[in-house]
Length: 182
Length: 155
Ligand SMILES: [Zn+2]
Image (cartoon, rainbow over all chains, first blue to last red; front, side, top):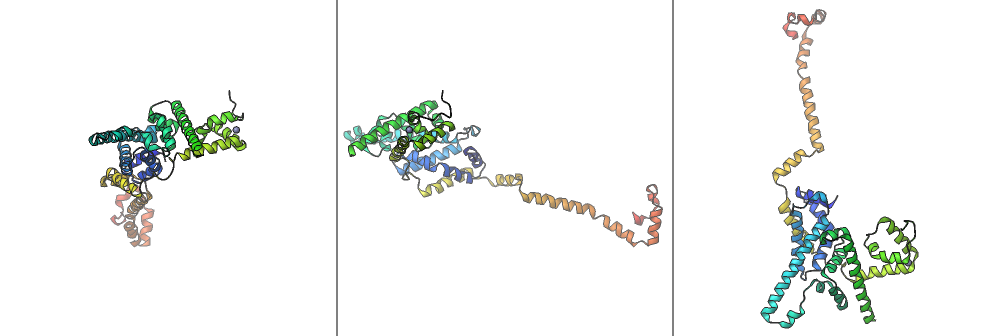
């Protein structure tokens, strides 16, 4: 049964349809959210909010399909809003405490939360937000190029070239890291 | 222009490894990449390296999974928003073509058939009460036009 059929059944009151949607998307959606916001509890709140918003939004035409793209579009917007407000909060705190060093050292952009190693982090930082997003949507969200194109509102070819460029940059950084370790 | 049965070169495969990994190639190209990987050690190693690098990102691991209670919490919220009212459930149950309704319809038909069959019994028992000679007379003199002349007992 398609995702869209499940949403339809849920809206008719069949709660078991939600269980199936949760099974299909919880790992991918939570991974996507958790890798952008720092806090586990905040990630869980956002995850719930995104899921409920999408299920309740009757403005979306189910006959057109594309539930996954719709879900991740809402997720991307909510995460960016959360990151922005987090950034504002941190800036306010930094000002209040007059911690100039902390203020200048906390870019709080997506890249910082995405990377493990320092070199890898550097490589991710050098990517544009669009490239970072495309890689997250592909690698964690497991969306197709077509679905990512819908989320980002760009042609499919642009998505493909962004994915290729982002992976090439990251692989270059990993090679660099390996050389230093070696 | 590429013919679909022409084998890919290492360069062709190298350009397509990422799309192959993400299952984004058309079926014809996917088969040609797979055939090339099966016989070319260099490209097979390059593919393994790509796979390992993407794994090294650590984005596919199990650490970013929701807590086990999140499903139940979210399910509770979903139930509160989407659960059917009693009236909705009843109307759905009535509209649903399930075997029990077919059985009910059959039972109603049987009852109706019995209803029409039953009134014949008192009439036949009345006829049975007549003497054989009387019955013979009735049969011999039977005429639809003379029904009113018959004994009221036979009607
Ligand atoms: Zn080769």
